Image (cartoon, rainbow, N blue to C red; front, side):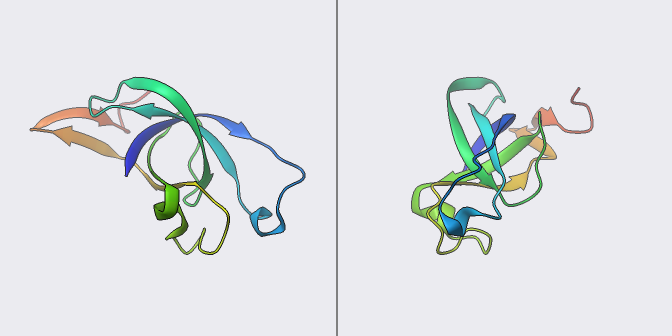
Length: 99
């Protein structure tokens, strides 16, 4: 599992039929400190995440292990919205305090 921040949406009006009900979001990968690291990732949203939220996502074959993405040609899925990220007793992110 990886940490990411939702930075945008992706709309595709024509797509493989099994992807019809999926909402796609654009993520920026985060490190354990909650800082943006590099590239972007498009992921199917299985939990109703919104712009600016910090999320947990999976890629590769793990992305097809949720009920939402099973048997679909999906290489990335958001599977959790992060409320609090704490590392060694230090809170790195708290949704209730985020802008």
